[in-house]
Length: 368
Image (cartoon, rainbow, N blue to C red; front, side, top):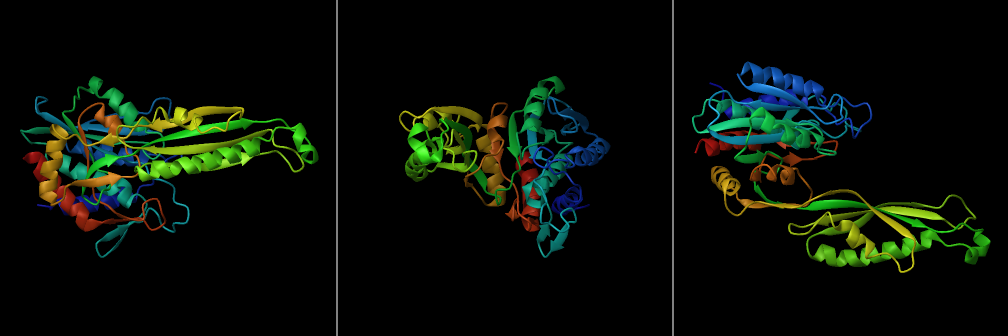
């Protein structure tokens, strides 16, 4: 009988070998169709009821919901992972999994095809369980706008899936995630009045207003960072040509929020930093809320059991966003998975010892 950990390593290599670069991030990229087809065939052969869910308004951006065979009155555990990856610029052989010692290199190895492989193997091992009904939610577009998870979450009731708990196998170095920060992206556009630069007093300099705003953001950022959040400007542009007072200048502001803070209110926080008298338009471009692991209930209990099996605890506070807040709206949610290094870089790798440990531990924790 094949060890589940070794089976997960083998499946991770298969998944890394399939190009699934997010086509919203990279024009003309493959998207998730090929990796979905591969997993569809595998899970259907294993007896799972497999449904393909397409992101709303998107062509060629499928996700999978795979429900284990057997009675539906068992406790339903959703095992979630994303199938898309970021781009491969600078990588010589991004889809050729290379194993060196206990490391597997390749695009998506850590983020997060090894985690996907682990939950697939765990679901297959637990398919005949009399205690739980594993449901795989393997989604598109996590690296961009989360359209895959949003579509799958909307489809679950119609598929007869009502989760009791959800585990997301994102890379955490096998620690349980305790929290993750939310984010907001806010666009600020300053409008001035053009004039010849030799007669600046006849115009209104939008770049000067932008400059005062940038200084205010950096001053405020000191307080935000001290509290554990982040505030910064990540893009600026303005002016149209030399010798002309700029009549337009704009920037993007990013705010990282903590659990209990509202990312949706970020535009108001940015608006409060505008220079007095400036003609500016503030618009929220995107926002996602922060998340914290429940102190009690099904997710806390699953996290504790999994932590006991792994010898870890809820110690990881993610500085970036993951999809747990979306899944938390459906069921209590926990995050834990194997990691490595080089995420989103040219030398991405996953720790195969972690993949093996996580797969075995997850099966044991869900059987308990």
